[in-house]
Length: 145
Image 1 (cartoon, one colour):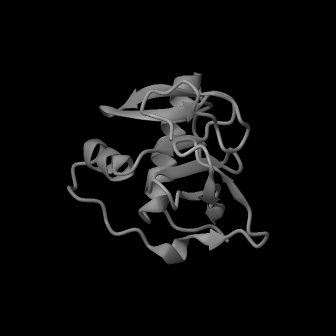
Image 2 (cartoon, rainbow, N blue to C red; image 1 turned 90 degrees about the vertical axis):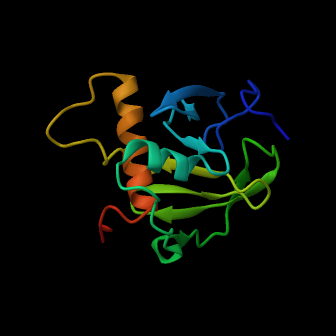
């Protein structure tokens, strides 16, 4: 199992190294190539609490997630074994690890960036992705059909 801040952690999508970034005081692992995000166990809820003034996050609605019809599994960046069952929620794909309970989220399409502005830097694009992913996981945005 990879330890926190382990440089050998790689993206489940593109296998590139994940870099550490701090957002709202929470240190996250982010792919510089495809903007996938790794939340260690408890970090998703901690990020919600740190970035909003509404207290505890709502319960995650499992019906928001659609299982990949092909039954794809990927390698968890923390466990370094194939324990991630691919699921979809709106424009993101990802899922929880059955081994360490971390959560991987990756934009399937770059549609979550605010329409009224073009991303002005890699940092703001990643921040936008994190906000959109957290909102979707906790049901903050309506599903698009």
